[in-house]
Length: 271
Image (cartoon, rainbow, N blue to C red; front, side, top):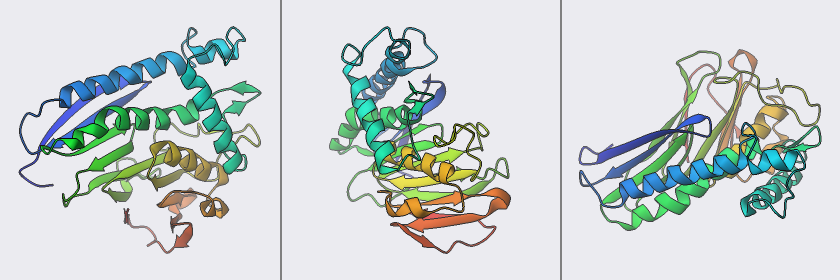
């Protein structure tokens, strides 16, 4: 990171997780940064109001109880429902927002929401010559962007699920997104939509893509498919990624093709 750059960080607890916005600038104070960040957090809170399954008055909760129709709900609910249907089709059922017949878009909403507010509120910051780069971090999943001509990457550490406090990989990313699903933070919480039981075939799956919504969906697919099945990477629009299984076994892929990874050592994924 260049010594001349100044970092502004804003943090909020939104959607049940800590979300932070990082903006790198050439000047100590740049007009518009605080407003853009505040607007991003405000929209995330509004998205949570609409989509949270933990709020009885959310549109999704009311929809699940039959008190609200999709047509009468916030228009973003229909948008997400369509995206979830498309994700289920393209992943051949390895991702689904329908569990037990009920609509639950939780597995999609985080990535979509964070990417949406990043592009809507942070994206325009790079039109200011004093802004060098920005990133938004939601529980370790990130969408980042860097000004043209600036020689720097964001470095995103991927937690090792078998070694608390250690890294399994470092992603170096100039523009785009990285998402990780697995057991490192929340245990075995991902359900296999084909069986309704916890997905135990992989402990971690990371996907690097242009879009955080896309990366998040396919990172979930990697956990559901498991360490022994990388057939899905041929369909994944992501740039690269890795899957970790029991005992630290790691498989890495780039542009839909598996590549060698050094056993037992963190490796760098550049994208």
